[in-house]
Amino acid sequence: MQCSDLLKLVVEGKIDKEIGAYYDCFLSLQHFLRFNVAIKLKRKVIKIGNYVYFDLDYDRPSSFISGIDDTTGKIFTMPVRMCGIYYETEEEIRKCMGFDYHYYEKFEYATNVKIRIQGDLVMDVIRAYDKKEELLKYVNENKENFRQLWESFVRAELGKNKEMQNAEVLIGAYQELMDFALNTRVYKEEDRKDVIKVVKLLRIIENNVLTLAKKYGIQVHNLYEKPRSSEPERYKCIRFLDIQEFARKLREKKAEELSENFDNFVLSQENTVKIRIGHYTTPHEISLNGVITDVVEGRRVNALILSPQKITVKHPEHGLNEFYVPKPSYVQFRLMEPF
Image (tube, rainbow, N blue to C red; front, side):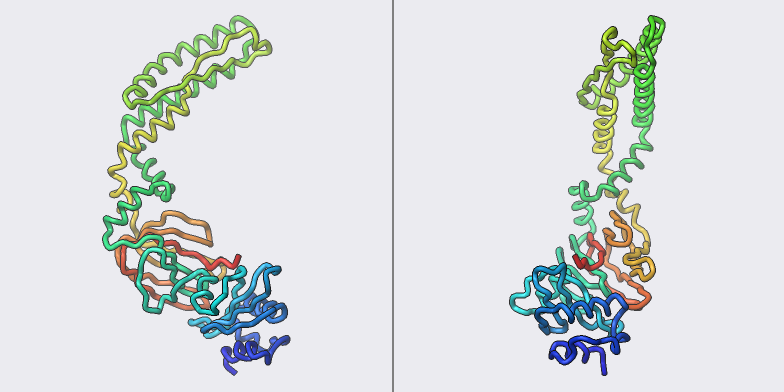
């Protein structure tokens, strides 16, 4: 008996309880056990296209979808939230599983298309453009969505900028003197005088900080703090600049000033990468040429694919798949989410 026949028998109600004899028809023990739960707790079984939907009703954590894996010919069983199966269409089933098309089907490659690449691996096309320049423009206009990439650029560019190098020295020195003054324990007049000496040195640096703030139109706020003392009421507050706020604003100003180099930085990050998604014992290994922008270890990877190319995916059970990306794209590789 072929594995697909088992699904047919379950739908027809000819197999309802014991399926141990068919263990080898399943992708793994996990899929076998899910299938057992599905047939034992089902409220309804529906054959929809190439899939079987086991409806466990709304009061269960999930329902299940089973089908034949296209690479191994074995049965998979995937838990899904209660799906909107109203018209019993394959489109609804695919939506439940989190994709629109299989990689081998003919479809229009475009923004918001979700493509099943292999097993439970899906590639979401977040954005697709006809030209690389259009993709780079999108990245530039949505830097908040590319925080890791932008922060890498900022660190690289600011680290090379002479004015920022000098400014960081000033900021660090100011903060150090401020901390020293505030952490000096004041018990007697001599201690108070020592604090004053440190603050006078700080005021010299402060003038340079204010000059830089004026140049970049940065409003610097003051902080008022007292040194450490057993009798704090005896001492006045000391005025300091909010040096960390100034540092943050200056870095932002300089980063914007240097942002015209961001496109070139993104292009410089393009290289051949291998991405592993899934359980560490059986990961999907994706090979492509692009820029990694965000990673959730083992679960999700976002990438910029700057030019049309063929990507390859290897898996211990599913073997080797190839898929052609026809346009510059911003994509996310992820696993189908059961919950």
